[in-house]
Length: 135
Image (cartoon, rainbow, N blue to C red; front, side, top):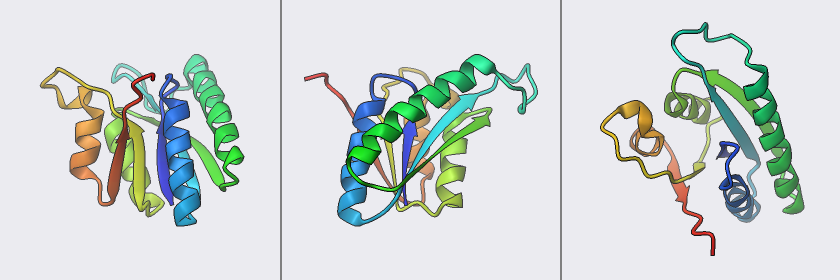
């Protein structure tokens, strides 16, 4: 299983295509994951219609890309306080062999700002970070 992290950004297409190419070659399905970060001021299970709608739209668009590669996929939306820990937890739950996510450079010492660093440090599988230069 390959875990592809979708964020609703311009990088989603690149992440989905990269994960799909690898999945096809490795003969693995792709699990598309969209994480909604819930502020600590609100209950974790609080529904945010705008956030959920954004996640569903992002998953729908990336599922189309995965289908073009004729790879099996499943999309999920999770709510968490911190995306990094949700990604690690999901990767362990599905026994992912690989995590694919967009690299996002952070200039902060705050652990919660650096999702890529957290995932690469805590993953029990391989991690590929995609950098879409726009070229």
